[in-house]
Amino acid sequence: MGNTVHRTAVVADDVELGDGNEIGPFAIIESGCKLGSGNVVMARAQLATGTSLGDENRIYPGAVVGHEPQDVSWEPWPSFTRIGSRNRIREYVTIHRGTQEGSETVIGDECFLMAYSHVAHNVVVGDRVTLVNNASLTGHCEVGDGAILSGMVGLHQFTRVGRLAIVSALSAANRDIPPFVMCGGRPVVAQGVNLVGLRRNGFSPDARAAVKRAFKVLFRSGLSVPEAIEALERDFDSPEVAELAAFVRDSKRGVIAYGEDRIAHRKRSGIGATAAIEGIAPESDVAESDEG
Image (cartoon, rainbow, N blue to C red):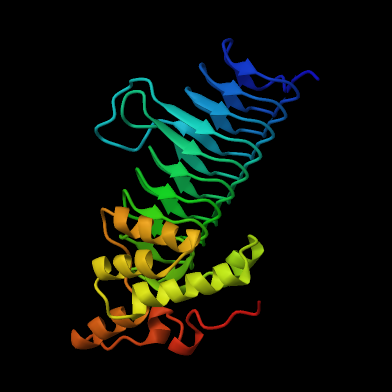
């Protein structure tokens, strides 16, 4: 199947195109780009130099993929943006290429980047990640498979988000968010386990129960982080809990706190914030219910 390129599109002579790609009106594909097969690049979207796409991606009007990083130390040396397959990159999404020479920004497969979301330089996004409108990933962040960042969520540079974590709208995170955690607030605090996400991704009842118990050990047992990691590794025979423990152990920024710890700190400080203001679930709702 041949490629369809609108007569007003601008496609550099050295662009590599697979089969069945559709390039819309006034789209721009710069020198050094590579596209697999079955991609749709819609009107006025732009793929900047050094960008590669897999197959069957849909790039919506006005999206800019692979442009120069917003980094004052950047110089015009070669760097890259690598996009997998079957992603949906909606209107006016911005994705910037790596900032160091030869480095890259990476997005996996089957991600859904909603309108106006932003992926900065050197970010690594896994598979099936959702960024809701205006969510923003700053430089060098990492987001694990299946994670969901709701509208207008912001992450500090180098922050990691674990697999199947979910972050509520308007939240801001400056510490790592462990796998399987449901969280939110400014700053983000842990609220419970993403049980719905675990069920939808085929986790067995035993696996979900193990993650719930591990959440309590990590966030609600009163143990220090090193003590909690030791308990997780000693007392659980679960690959999911092992993943959780390894994530926390490898954290360089530290992991988010539990919601009640944050409330207690604010009360001690005389701020007088309530759980409702912080958006924190009541204790009875935290990681306690599972419908199987």
